[in-house]
Length: 294
Ligand SMILES: Cc1cc2nc3c(=O)[nH]c(=O)nc-3n(C[C@H](O)[C@H](O)[C@H](O)COP(=O)(O)OP(=O)(O)OC[C@H]3O[C@@H](n4cnc5c(N)ncnc54)[C@H](O)[C@@H]3O)c2cc1C
Image (cartoon, rainbow, N blue to C red; front, side, top):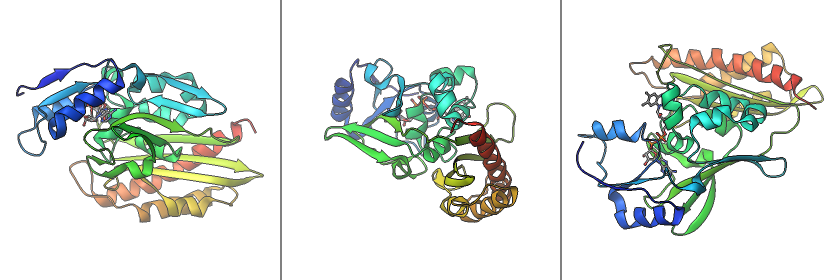
């Protein structure tokens, strides 16, 4: 690795000032599990940062809190282990606990932050589908103050987000899931351990009076960004849950995604996986919704 300046500020204001002074050549550093390997390989596609601003000591970026009024707040600096093990996340947002709980190894999960997962903007990011399905807002801070962006608008393309160079992702805000909501996330990886998703699927279903009142389906690794499957959601809403309905919605999800072929799998294989996994996630989410308190 080449030389770079390293700063470890203790407040958000200080971190933002250091980023601003560093201009385009400064980069925030969270757990480093994406950024450091990228710097090591940086000869071609990745502009090598001259300045790293570590976020590890910034208290404002930490913590996970849930209230029945405000919902869930997750600091961007919360680790995947923090998220996967949080009692509030496990109980109220199980699909997110499942997404955070498959990131790399225990060591990776202890370093990797949820903010880093989103800001790295890989289409396969495991925290993203559940956050999209729970309709998370990304709270961004910068010289102009704070703004909240729906997560669906945060991702612009592989490695590209709505963040300017002098902005940081501060936290995620998730609304309280209504009663009788069930959710699930699974991914498929070619290898059992330490691989990234070929397809990831999150489903969140809310039941009311024996029908699906609200459906959210989000897909990872089958488009330039993690995406919602709007046509699948429309097919589900207002209908009584059934295996036939889930199969139909899963077909819609497979038809509306736009996977590529790469060394992990062909586009056709990914589309097939979307169908199978969406059907399974919908069935699991519906089962959990039936078990949830009304
Ligand atoms: C062995 C291994 C296994 C992995 N397995 C998985 C996996 O199974 N699933 C998966 O999704 N990922 C996986 N990853 C990728 C990585 O661990 C995750 O994406 C992780 O969440 C990145 O977080 P980080 O804190 O390490 O980010 P960093 O590497 O520190 O940062 C990533 C990017 O985000 C930017 N950034 C970080 N925080 C902020 C912020 N608050 N505001 C603005 N920009 C910010 C950085 O500048 C950088 O561009 C793996 C990585 C390794 C090394």
